[in-house]
Length: 302
Image (cartoon, rainbow, N blue to C red; front, side):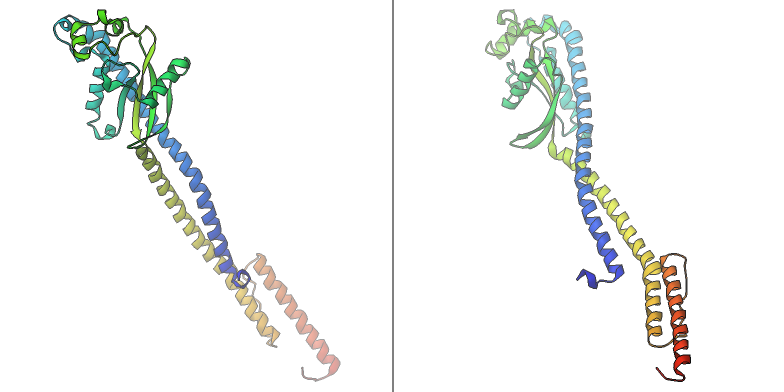
């Protein structure tokens, strides 16, 4: 069937095949690159949030807790707990639209407040930080009942001796804290021990949606450009190749039927023009041959 197509149709089909194959390959590569770019962008924002929460923790431990430590003897104040402050600040931050989809947790193996208890996946992350001392960061995708999420985590060690006042031995902890949380959890921590991981999470759909939106935009733009290119190539092919060839074919057919007055016009100096010039030489040779034949055979009609 392809051999029955005109030259214009063959070029159009060829360009369409190139378009489909090119868009398929470039789409796959582009999708992967944009997904990685979107992941890096989210990770960068997540790391900035972790650094912010670490600053809140530092502020709480160095400036808030010392000022309120005396009041802990009569009333437990969660505002003196660095993790509580970080969580509260992050909840306020999440009220802004650009941070609404982010979630923060200080996943702890042995927390005082069970709200911070690490699940099985988070426990694996914390234990990796405990076992691999040089590991400073983890990130990736994980599956949850609510859907896949992208997470980034950093280790959280016991870096201040003041932390051990509440999480060392139960008898050294403020009585008001014991009255509220009991002595079953959150004790026995050691200095410099990694007891938790700061984890920022965001639904994977948000990451992938950003990449998909960019992919569709770029692929759509490339497709539009390629369609314009096909139209321009077809226009050029029709005006510079197809029409001149049709003209040469029509003149050749007239010459073949004996109309020697038909003229092969050379409209360009490219291959089409050279073809017209060759046909013109052939026409002149044919005319000379016909004249010789007539001179040889007299006035015989052919």
